[in-house]
Image (cartoon, rainbow, N blue to C red; front, side, top):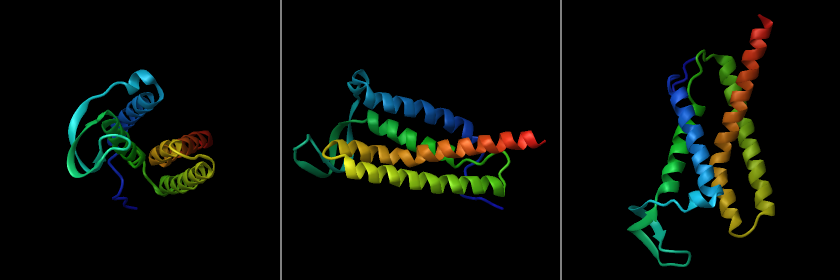
Length: 160
């Protein structure tokens, strides 16, 4: 079966390494104060932006902003999507079935976590929950898919 929506297999190694490194840096950037102080300010185009918590909204204007978190988030998302949806060395119907089930369970788990946080996290900390929701489905999918593929390959070798 032809799967045109998957990336080539050779992207997997490069994107996997880039995903792990950028995710560690991204988490470190938000978890530890010394990384949070690292800033690289640049003028960026903003559809909507402001100059502080209660500042004036700038619409379709150039604003000065630290771009470290945006760059790291972009690398995490792009490399994560490429890693998650790169073809396996031997892509067949079983691998596609594992991929589909992992994606379905990742979606269910992600929305379960989001619903729990929606009911029990309030105020500004909920913004952190929403930021985590951007990455959680991708990360849950990658973990589930890699684990199920590991189990598939180990049980297949045991049968031989």
